[in-house]
Length: 255
Ligand SMILES: NC(=O)c1ccc[n+]([C@@H]2O[C@H](COP(=O)([O-])OP(=O)(O)OC[C@H]3O[C@@H](n4cnc5c(N)ncnc54)[C@H](O)[C@@H]3O)[C@@H](O)[C@H]2O)c1
Image 1 (cartoon, rainbow, N blue to C red):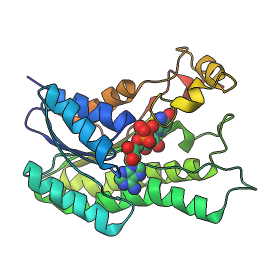
Image 2 (tube, protein in one colour):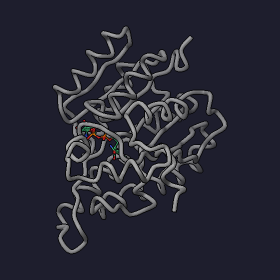
Image 3 (cartoon, rainbow, N blue to C red):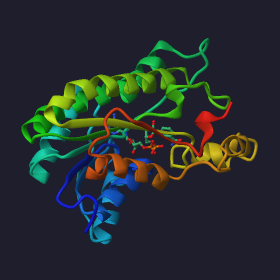
């Protein structure tokens, strides 16, 4: 028995990192996964990995979820492929960093569009299907950056966007409750993915300090985040809505 047997799980940004790990885990637990990504090649790699492990996965790529048309196209294609929708994981994001006096408005806007707008657009497109199906589980991938600054990265737009993702999560809890829709978030701290590997591998970079700040003494792996997402996606969390699970080695509660 898998923990997601019979579930249809839509996961955004399955071309890498946390999205790929979540697709592999959800499929291993019995879900029919439909992913998507901006990049067709990495998306197809994940589909291949899942199927090689005996899992069920399709994907739509390339698709840009930061456009109304792209978000709608993914959801409609995914629902058609899977025959419905029980779980939506809003994982995809793209970021541009910059200190406040150097961050261009274009880079700020890019980040808000690709970290916050896309969660709104995808969720809005998926909502009628969740309502029609009698409910479901939405898991938003936020960040520890939603609630604190970072010493190693000027993340003005990123923190603001992820704060918005959390605020949106809480409003959707209220609107989803009567329909049986649960909405939760996970907030990873530094996690080793293709996106962050160059920073962590830089001998002059902040890797050691990042690990030291977490009481558990290491940064995260994509599978650490995927496990928290799995719990919130599954019926094991059937009375949990509005939670924000930190996946940070304990860093969030240390002064
Ligand atoms: N890695 C970390 O340290 C860390 C920490 C906190 C939060 N997070 C969050 O976890 C999530 C996954 O992070 P990751 O490190 O695995 O990122 P990643 O960059 O490795 O993967 C994100 C995927 O989303 C895709 N994507 C980006 N914009 C898209 C768009 N507009 N349409 C479709 N696909 C798009 C990318 O192509 C990529 O494959 C993100 O929401 C990120 O903000 C990551």
